[in-house]
Image (cartoon, rainbow, N blue to C red):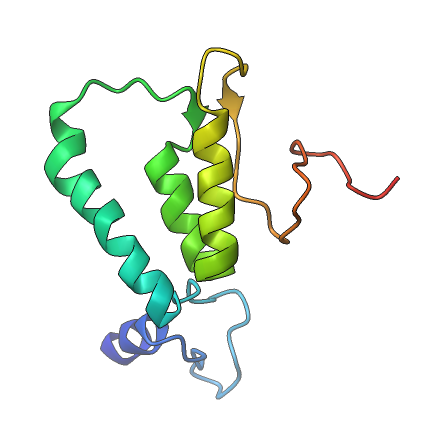
Amino acid sequence: MRNEQAATEHGDCVHDSAGGHDETTQAAPRPTPVAWILLLPIRFYRKAISPFLPPMCRFYPSCSTYAAEALTKHGAARGTYLAVRRLLRCGPWTPPGRDPVPETFSFRRQSPGMSTEE
């Protein structure tokens, strides 16, 4: 069990007792070194500043969670672009709601369930 946890934390495949690969267990993507550095101010904000502010985010997930996920999933440049684009949408002119990080990167904004191909 301890080896499975260590393997999962390091992004390795987990082997079952029969010696096969367990395809359902997939480790979360690791941020690139530059993205990891960009995550530091987000982590500081979430630990030191956010607990003292009332929850008032218009979107789900919150902007800091969105930025951390975008940097981890898409890397430093694309993740920063997605995070800044999300912060610019945070205002009274945009309707609130669910706004997940896109699975594939695109410069065009697409609503959940909407395709960029027309």
